[in-house]
Length: 91
Image (cartoon, rainbow, N blue to C red):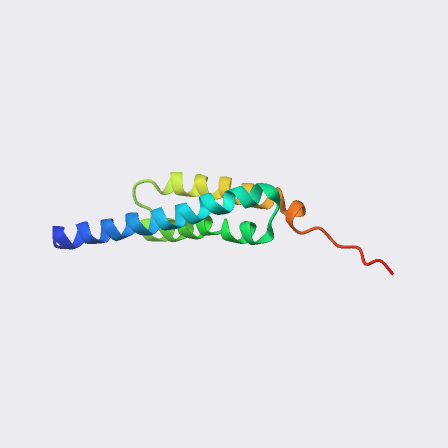
């Protein structure tokens, strides 16, 4: 592959990661407050990690991607009850 094309891909990859990272930071503030939309927005990171893990094809660094994915998923599922409590209907 041409090195200029590779540099272009890397540039756009960094832009995409920056934008998604910025959105995650914005959502993190609301995440701490228990907003449901922030919980859904925080799924950006696991989705990106799954894509990166699939694209690595068992190459260098897939272990770090997998460990990071497990940590992020645990961080999303542990406070699940905070975001999705059963609302009692009052008569």
